Length: 493
Image (cartoon, rainbow, N blue to C red; front, side, top):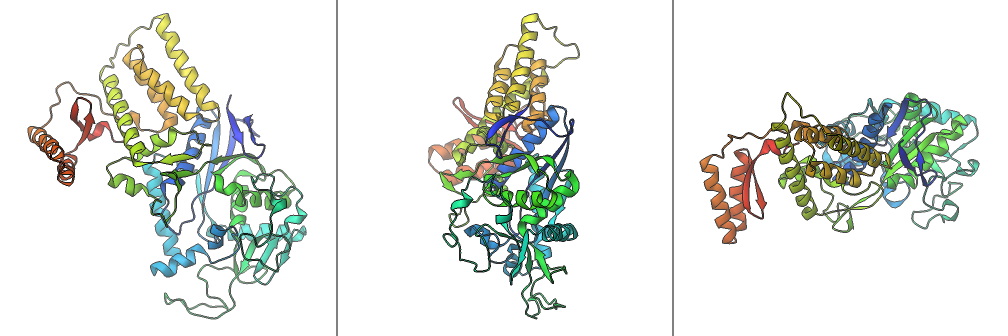
């Protein structure tokens, strides 16, 4: 029985889908104006774990993830997503590319990294710019039902007409004072009101990229609507796209904890006001990742990307393993020392897996009743942990118990492969250990050179030697017994 924490009810609940075994699940994806950092990927890994656990429990999941390529304004950083300028337009000016090319480039990089993390692709990636018609239709529905009003810069949702507004949010929306965090908008009726459709600026200009605007505008991404030339607000896209494919009421909506304050409450308000039905039954939010105890930010230079991790000699699987060690609802603190520790642990696990695999035989060992009971107990406990609100730290503890247990190697191997269908660490790709494998003599000499450089505290020279060893297909593993060379195939995901 799967139990999951529901941010809407603020408690762990038994998961009961609308139409079992079918499950509808939507995750808020990235705004593709810049690279996605490793804190974002912790959120996407949480969604991936939930997706895998649902499949483990024999549910048939329709999984949707959006790509935001229009409408997300820079004011969101200051607490008001309706102010500032479109992130895509700003990135376009900065990089000297069209907004469309910016979106395409960063979406491609995101999807490449997504695959390197061994994340399960959604059934559909939905881009906001490809669902403008659906978004306009949803705004029209809200307008016809009396939930909107018009200002000089757009069409806004009137939150005072939706009594349950903010029921998901950790904020006390009743106590919000307009202007406390953002510049006061005199045309907004309520501080919590939000834009559904924004009007394009009414100035005829040519773009810096040589494209002449055909109307009274200076935007690259804009569309005709019943209210004039403009573009959708950030929040409306998720409601329109999720309901198109998952229905007016569906099972799970996932995302980062930052979205629980405003973006997701706005989704709920506009969706339920339009349909008169509950929008989503279970809301799942992953907590922030800190770096050395501080929030990730460009100004601090700590918003690391996957490429930063790889350049330091680590693998995506090392970072995924690090994510698993902290419960998804707890803030996680990233340090390079912690990543090194997980790298060593994962390398050790894969070494053991290689040994288990090499000891497999066509004729399996007949298990005693005692060992059969152990195997069944391990399997049951692992399922219990993952079904207990995705308790991955405890699931990892069971995994290591199996690795150190007295059950036959082939059963250890089978159990760990089964567990890895959830953990996603790439254990199935481990190459079996070979009894006649030898380390090339020239690499042994390089290893000795590295050790001599380290003794002389010539760290940079030692690192150059280590890089030469890596280029030859081996990794250096420092152990209490001294350094060892390990083939990369044993540690790669």
